[in-house]
Image 1: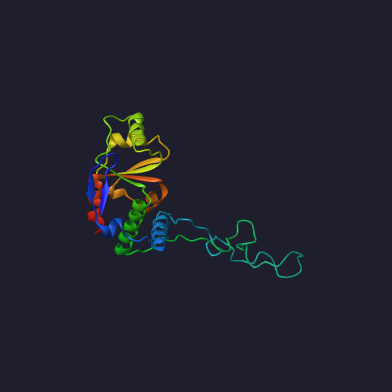
Image 2 (image 1 turned 120 degrees about the vertical axis):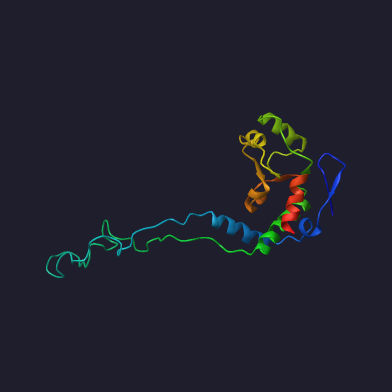
Length: 201
């Protein structure tokens, strides 16, 4: 299939397997969920009654004191006692096969093309780190919320858009499924498009 460059009559040939694939909502959901789960620290921890120091001796005798029966001072119902269902450090990472991840990305890019939310540009660069320049380039595409994908990191471009709340810049290596779903439009340079196609094949 062919994709038209924004504000130009030029077209670029792309693979149907990547940019004209049927949308797989379940796979996309699984990929996004796995990505978010992988970002969780999982370092939460509480002390159970076995982790609390002391508590070996019975606090008072079983009968005759007028107080409730108690076998240990580590009881969860006591102040400074252990937690009943203590949290433990855990790993939230979910395993996904590489084929599944590539298929999910291809499915997302295909849906962006169908919804006319993918904008291919010859280049997206600014001469100096000025937000005004970035806004001018976005206004030419009639876009306010966008993820800009470039082949290599551009410091000037990053500095130009960092104050824009609904715009972000990423290179191929930093591309993630959440950003593709989050932003209303995706702007990708011609060179980055070729790199994405090579990566997902």
